[in-house]
Image (cartoon, rainbow, N blue to C red; front, side, top):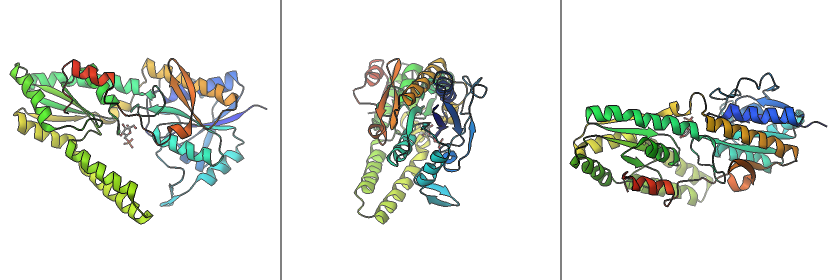
Amino acid sequence: MAKRIGVLTAGGDAPGLNAAIRGLGKAAVGRHGMELIGFRGGVRGLAEDDWAPLDHASLSGILTAGGTILGTSRDKVHKMVVDGEPRDMIPTIAETVERNKLDCVVLLGGGGTAKNALRLHEAGIPVMHLPKTIDKDIAHTDNSFGFATALEIATEAVDRLHSTAHSHHRVIIAEIMGHKAGWLALGAGIAGGADVILLPELPYQLDSIAETIEQRKARGTNFSVIAVAEGARDVHATAELEAAESLIKSASSPEAKAIAKENFARIQDQHRENPFRLAREVEAATGLESRVTILGYVQRGGTPNAADRLLGSVIGSAAADLIDSGESGIMVAARGEGAAPVPLADVAGNLSLVPKDHPWIRTARDVGTGLGD
Ligand code: F6P
């Protein structure tokens, strides 16, 4: 009997999601004769049994579109807010899967989605995860669709910011997304020729940043562009956050854990102003007028580039083959030019951060970029 599968997109939107839905759908329906349905609004669509069939017509013309045709959310399957209260929706989701006679649910998303997928897998629901994120922070995959496009956008932004920095003799701080990882800021910083790059993986010191800017001034260059990852913090803030995080891990009761989590969130919230504080500090230390540009959602928007269309298509169609051969409980990782299955248990909860000895870090130093450390 023909297999019947469901697909959904969860977490932040990213360029290449529609290419992956199309790759999965065309291979599943066209080559394997499966039936495909698309759940709306992330895992909430699964809980609410909210879906539409996906056929050749609905999979057509979406390759180049940004965002996701299915909509998305950041809901968690084990504590979804329903009527204002967090509820474990895993049993309800199991009923949806049963009622629709699904052989597999394919979840396209990042780290949070991998955790959702693992929870469903552990509850006996057949699932598969496809790695999507502009942050490139998913463990055990060479890449994730979304990153290549975001890298191009952020690089172009760093390029363009040079005009104002140069013309007005200013320091411009560009905040680049990436969550807890510095891949996007590091890649765009190197490719865009940033003078300083600040990453979560290398806590920075103001003195070191000021020194790089002063050295440039001494050579007659009265401007600088700083690419700062949204998760980058100075050494003091990093120590404060690490201490707050370890209190969560060592909490002896659920109540103590909840208080520790609240405290951590409060400290994190205070650090949201980080680029603006840094601009004031850099201005005071160097005497150069300093400004902030937050690239924000521009980095996730618009048409996916060729690399993300290609990666989404490759991973999507590989997923259809893996479902056909009866696989589940896996992520379809990008491996070389193809794809490979990795157990979800190895992926969920693990982040891929920039190793301190990564070639990109060495390259940045070699081309004279300050890393603030
Ligand atoms: O994971 C993608 C990402 O864009 C991160 O870089 C960023 O930290 C986060 O999503 C922003 O989340 P939201 O869409 O909830 O504002």
